[in-house]
Length: 217
Image (cartoon, rainbow, N blue to C red):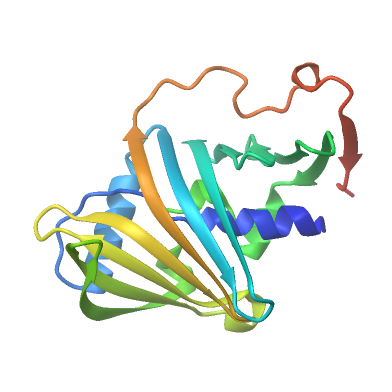
C-alpha cells in the first residue's frame, strides 16, 4: 500500500458544517447522517493543525474537498487525491508523480472521504462529554471511539458542535495513538453545488510529464 496515500487519506476524518435537531450524542450523529445522505454534492474548505508531541513537530495545512456520491476530489496543496469510486489517484505536486490505487482499499481501512458523514454509524462508540467553549462559542463535545481500535492510527475523535435547535460542527480533533494530534476547523461548507465533468477523474493532459505509479494488483 502507498504510505503517502494512507497517511493523507486520514484527512477524510475532517468535520464539516451540518445542521440537525437532537439532544444526545447518538441523536445528533443520526440526524447528521440522515441530512448528509440527502446531499447531492458537497463543496467544503477547512484548515488543519497537526502536532506531533513525540517528535516535537507541527504543521499547518488547508484543504478543499468536492464530493458526489462515492466520488471525491481532495486538494491539499502539495497533494491532490481524486477518486471516481473505483480508482484512486494520489498526485504529488512537487515530484510530479501520481500513485494509482483501488478505491476498495479505502473501504477496508475506513478512510473513504466520500463516507465522512456516516463513518460513525458502525465504526464508533459515542459519548457526549458536555459543553465547552470553542472560540467564544458554547459547543457540545462528542467523543467517538473506534470499535476496531487496534487497526486505527488514532484512539479518539472529538467533535465540537454548536447550536441548540440548529447544530453545526465547527471543529474536530483527531487524537493519534503515537502522540500526534490533528485539529480541523471548517472555513466553508456548501451543498448542491454544480461540479464540472471530469472532476473525479485524473487526466494526464492536465499534468505534463507526470509519472504514473500503478499500485493495483
